[in-house]
Structures are given as structure tokens and as C-alpha cells.
Image (spheres, rainbow, N blue to C red):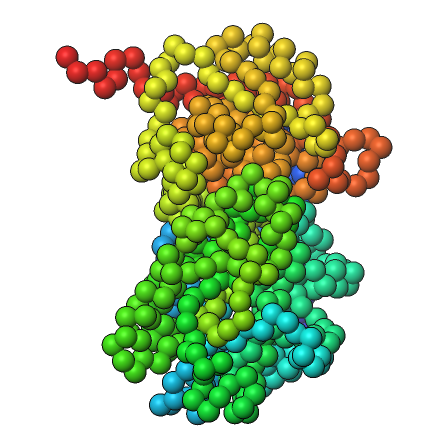
Length: 610
């Protein structure tokens, strides 16, 4: 018996040693297959023994470039593993599932079809006017936490709240815990892969309690009461338990930068059944008038950052695009008792029938943002300050997606290989057309810059910065570039000294754009197809894939050059620190960009007709 036991133990030991030998052999061959200088360009995280985080890629999807002909591409999948680890293996579909869900019209279809009646009047049947007040909220999933927007029907607005008694606001006041819950379960699930809205890697193995608390305080709303408030908006409805497609409870809605988002906007809505004779009369009318008109209420972040403004305008446009597709939600929201009401409902969400009112930061944004005028593209009219909104009852009040909820400002810690995005193309066309820049129609991002030929110098623009995130030794680097590439025309540009129209025209005439991670690289989305952008990034642990993802969607070649970490600096302040990149790496990357751009120019005589 002992002999048999010893044989089993010996067999097990031999099997284990064999497995370990095979693993070590694979490990050795994997690292031997990588370029000799690969570790000069990757962070400590990518130097781990997980081979799936570093893979070969075609030049069109490269994020970092090493030796000629070899590209590194960092990408994470869309799945969730049970151990909560944020480090992901390479997606088998190359991110195409994300691309199909987010980059095209499917995003709008999913958003339009995922909605819930969050507040309604149980006695509304057969009653006209404000007695039929409702709130419908829509939801979409791009990253771990969903994003929402809502539309209120027959909402009463009172600007002067001095006569309204103040009362505390709590999550129970908005919606009780047993009200609207995610479909299928009332049990809250443990959050996985939650990411703060900052471009930094987190502690992947086990986020600390401090990290988790900081994340919750910045991204999610506390469940404790928020303090007393006097509500300017009133809906004659109460919480309902009807839902469709699993929309979460409104008290769980996210809060974004500077307190923006529908979650914070709903704090100013009183949603309870009202007694006749208060602000409503017996016929369900306010002030003897029926509820009319459609408005959109927007909270701005302020500060004038061009990227932030673009995301806010774009989110408002996406909201209206989704509403135009939301036929079933519209039928549920509006009670149609006559042909006149049917006609009104048909056009109530058309841009020309909506007035936009800014609830917060309008003046500062108007003065600072170079693209504030784009708000006019949403409805055709200038936006107004909330102070200009008159008391009354409004048929439709839209609380749109926040700028921070824009799908193209989401999940930007993962590399994506989307080769096309109809949503990006449509928005770019709209912007270029509004500012009168050529190519603002269908040629915005679909046509190459055919005016160039192989003999002309490659036009390179380097974005200069006055205050922070300067490129150290830039003058020396430019001299080296000029000596190395006489076929290039290199210029440092100060975007803040140009009007937005001048900026866009310059970018449309640029073949290679170079800049440090920041608002200036927003112009990546306005570059022509077959051009290139080189992003100079802060050193580890900084990580941001947003501009690279965007570039690939519009056919722009993307390169990233990581900065060196200062010897005396233990932390990285990505918004303030100047960047120092290795000169040889920088010059080599510019050379590769020049070669790619020139190779994609039309050959002499192309398009000639004999």
C-alpha cells in the first residue's frame, strides 16, 4: 500500500515538473521574440509576465513605435473577470464589439430603446394637461457605470422660490429604494473595474480603501441626504415601478465634472402628486393655460476648455438624435387625445422647436470657450441663460446627456481599433460647416488631401504652450528635425492666438500634428484622412488612449512618445509638468510619420485626364 502511494506521489511530482518546464519554455520564447529595445518604451506594468498585454499590430493601429517594422499596441478587452483585476487580456475581436456598439448608429438605437417611466400619475387616464405629468429616463452602457438622460412632460417652473418652503432632499425623496430598480434584481451587485474620470492607472491588483472612497466621492452620488433645497420645478406625478430594459433608479444617476448631469438636475424637481388648488387647477392646467413648448436644460462645466465644450454640445446633439428614434418612448410619454396633439408630438423634439437654457456657467463658458457658438447648431438659435426662462408649464423638458457622458469621452484607458465612426464623421462635418471651413460637407473626413503631391514639403505643426506642459529642448529638437528632414516644413503654432476658424483651416492644411496630451490635440478629430498625429505623453503612471482611438476612427495615423520621468519627481502631474522626450525616439517617430504621409499622397499624374 505504501509502495502504491509513493508511486502516485512520484507521478504527480513528475507531472508538475513537466508543466512548469513547458511554462518556462513558453515564457523564454515569448520574450526572445520581442524586439531587443522593447522595454525602453513600455511601463513597469507592461513588463509583467502577461504576454497578452503586448502584441504586434499593423501600423494603422500602432500606439507606440519601436524599431522599423515593429509596432506595439496596447489593448484591453470589454469583459469582466470575477477577481476584480483591472488588467485585461487582448480582446479577441480587436475591440470590434465596442466599435459596433459605440462608434456608429447602434449607440443611438440602444439609447433610444432603453428607457423607463420613472414618474407618472396613476389618475392621468382621460385627464388633459398637467395632471398627466411624467418623467421618462433613458440609459446606455459604454463603460462600467451607465449614463442617463431624461425627459419630463408637463413640468411647472417657478423662478422665484422664496415662497416655496425648503425641505431636505434625500434619495428617498427622489425615488424610494423599492421604486425603480435595475430589471431582474433588486440586489445591488459589487462594482467591477470602476474607473475615476482621470487619466491615471489605478492600483490594479487591489485598489485601496482610500482609492475607492475617493472614486465614490467624485463620480457617484452619496446616498445620504444632500441638504435642504427649494425646488424650482414641479411634476404632478409619483414614483412608478414600471420599467423597460433595466434602467436604474434615478437617485443612482451619475454626477460628472462640476456637478453636471441629469442626476444633479433632478434635485431641483419636486415629484409628488399635487392637491387641486395649489399650482394646478381642477382641469390639470397651470395658470389657466395648457402646457406648451419644448426646452432643454443644460448645466455647463465652465472653464472654456475646447474639448469639454465640444463634448457638451455633442452630447446634446446625440440626445436629440436618440429622441428622434425613440418612437415608443414618445408614445408612452405623451397622451394623445386629438389630431392636434398628435401633430405636436410628432415635431416636439425637432431642433427648431426646442429652446436651450443654460442653468450653470453660461457667462464664463461664453467668454472663455472658442467654440461656444456651436450651441447654435443644435436648434438653430442661440442658447439663453436660465434667468430668461419664464414661469409656466412646459410640455417637454429635456435633461440631456452630460458632456462627461459623451461616448467618445468614455473608456479612454483602453485602446480601440475602430476604423470608422459615422457619429464622429457626422459631428466633424457639422462643426466644419458651421465655421465655414472647406470640406465641411461629405468630404470632411472621407477624402484625402488630394492637393498635395509627392514633391511638396510635408507640413508639420507643433502645438506650443505658454504656461504648462511645455516641450523641453524644443528648439534643439526642431533644428535636428530640419537637418534630418529637409523635405519637411516645420512650424510651432500658438492656437490661443488664432480664432477658431483660423485654427480649423490651419489643421485642415496640416499633415503631421505634434503636441502634448491636452486640449490642443482635440484638433485631431478635424484632421484629414491619411495625415498623422504624434502625441507626447506624460511618463508612467499616466495612461490615456482617447486621442489615439479618435485618430483611428477617422483614418489618421497615430503615434505616441512617452516622456522621461524626472529624477527628482516621485509623482506625475499630467496637467502641469513639462515633458522631456528622448531626442532619438522623437526624431525617429517623426521620420516614420513623414514616410507614411508621403506614401499616401497621390502619385504625380493621378487623376489626370488625357
